[in-house]
Image (cartoon, rainbow, N blue to C red; front, top):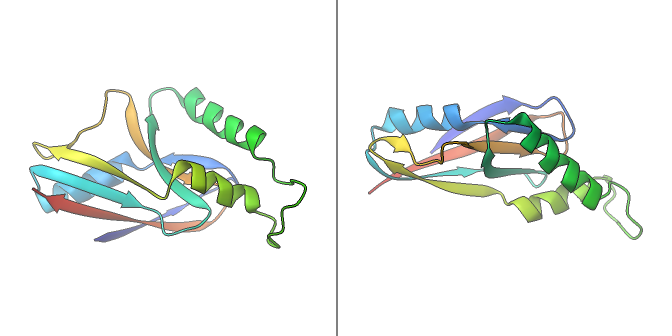
Amino acid sequence: MHELHLETHERFEMINVSDSVRQVVQSHGVESGAVVVYSPHTTAAVTINESWDPDVIHDVLLFLQQRIPAKYPGFRHREGNSDSHLMVNLIGASTTVLIDHGELVLGQWQGIFFCEFDGPRTRKFYVQVMGA
């Protein structure tokens, strides 16, 4: 398992980590299998989405922020980031990508994104490569 690090710069941000994951996969020399990308944080997620048009990322973050307000009647979490925790519950802490011929099996426009919902912070995520 590989532990990778990144710096986030905004409270809400989606960072394309596809190249970092691809490098880990290539370092293992696995021709066929799968890779899991996992966030150990309760306010950061991992997902697959379009990586070509940055407006998609903008729209995802805008939608989440409009549907899950930072302040909501009845929220009790003292840190004031209940919205961030809820976003992770919706997006998920991990994603799995197939590997074929040593390459990530992603659609033409797809990328793997680390989703920051409570930044800016120093974050880590894990990449586990499994060969078939």
